[in-house]
Length: 220
Image (cartoon, rainbow, N blue to C red):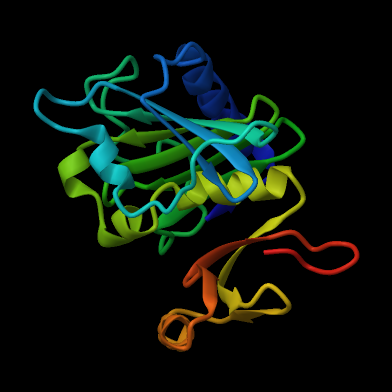
């Protein structure tokens, strides 16, 4: 469900603003890397002893940090952090009983929220401050898509913030020409990317790709 207006939006936006304010001074980053044009930093707090929060990023392809990248910070917030465990259920009026993933998009306030309460995963963002929070009720319950496409919601919002798109696409080619192939899951993007590797081409992405629309032409 997407909340964009009315009392539910107001209460959801207030909830997001209060939660982000409570963790506005995150711990020092424990991970840095360049993801596309982003200078991404990640901090973590509230994880049970013996649990490595950076394991959530094990499939995140990144490059060494570079100067001049657009800053974007993500706090991984475990159930023992300052906010406690993420809510077990959506605490605002539900207009769609079949809704499973619930979303707040309030660009006029610079706020965004996406929740998957079935798995206890809440993503929040302050677009103006260029920071996001991945709030987990129980890290052991993370679904496969949160592990194989880590931080995809935060990166999606970062792309929108900078006028770009996080496309469901593969990108590969040579220094002279590159091809962007977009399509839904199961349509063959990864297979094409694997074939591109076998053919000696450079692969930029095989499933999610940061795309800047241009001008003069789209840039992946």
